[in-house]
Image 1 (spheres, rainbow, N blue to C red):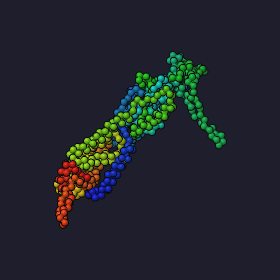
Image 2: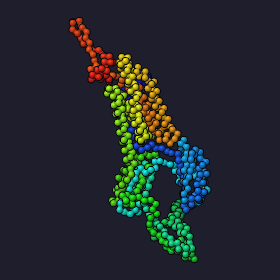
Image 3: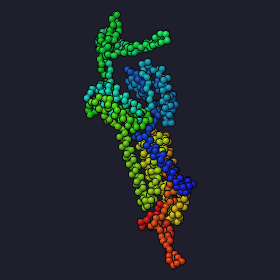
Length: 532
């Protein structure tokens, strides 16, 4: 480092370009960084959900949960395995150690569940295996406000709004809450069904068997081949009344003989209200790893285009927007970052009593902070509460190295009466090891924080690296830019003393002589300046 400082003192353009290269890269990276509320953290947890409609809790426990746990328990790296059995539903939660890759662990769980699936009941629904994602909370919530019925609003949300919003970049899912989807309901009279001595399953099987489009094979004629399809789905709800449920004594028993079919809605499982009025809500969830603010901005652009496709009496109102909280939090952090930089510079000014000295020391603050943005972009970090907090805390630390070097140069000028050029070189070499020891002691504190073996370490990963890089850049500035600027101090006109000597012709000549360093400080107090 001493050799680098000596080169930078002799080559000011070289020193400036080193620091400016980091600043330019950081400034360019700043505009490419994503904005989020918290860092993206993948917790090593996988959930397995299996449904068996109509089964009791005891049946779910013995026929589903235990068989799944027996297979999943053989996977390596499981820290905790627990399950929740409810009527008709089994939920198995697998928590792995932090060192286990979540994608590999999820694939191992899928393999084991596929093996256990052979021993599960025939009526069980396909298992749903998913990684736990703490970012699956809705980033944007939109309400459809209108005087129309819930069924009409649900049709608009499902057929018009959702397809448009799902095309927005970064959108993973658009979920409808509070809607009433359309459904053909078949109401069966239990007394009539008992009179015909038919089970309810015969009605269900008839609906499944006769309301379906089935492949009909191929027809070959010479060199031509055509595919056949059996178009068996009902286009009119009233046609369900004519479906044959069974044949008794040669007479068909139809749906209208045991009940009736109607064009209705499904059973309502969720409810939403806007200002006390029932409404339909669209919850926008982003894809895993996508930036929250970028997804929200893209959805808002899609909303502007969507307004032209919905009926005029239907209004799309944003009732929850996460970007507002993110922008508000980052605004407060940025404000504290700027105020902290200014206050730190004012404290230096109060002790140095020279704005030129303050400028030399304060240069380390923006260069260290801006240069850290380059590292954040390379490691795919975001501007979130954790990284910005690291930069705010570093404001008072990154200026320390420059102050130490600056003060030592000042001491060499004052006490050893050296010129600024020699003083900058000697003072930097004299204090170099102490500055490096101070900076590296901070680095060895912040870097291990990023690799803590706990959930907290996952959240503080970006914090530790951002703080460490900022401190390292401040060390580079203190060995390049700070001694170079200190070496180019100039005396002002007010700090110049005059002496006279006689000439041969009897006249006297005024000679300007440089004052001592103590005279510079006295002149500075009288209104001159001793720096730059």
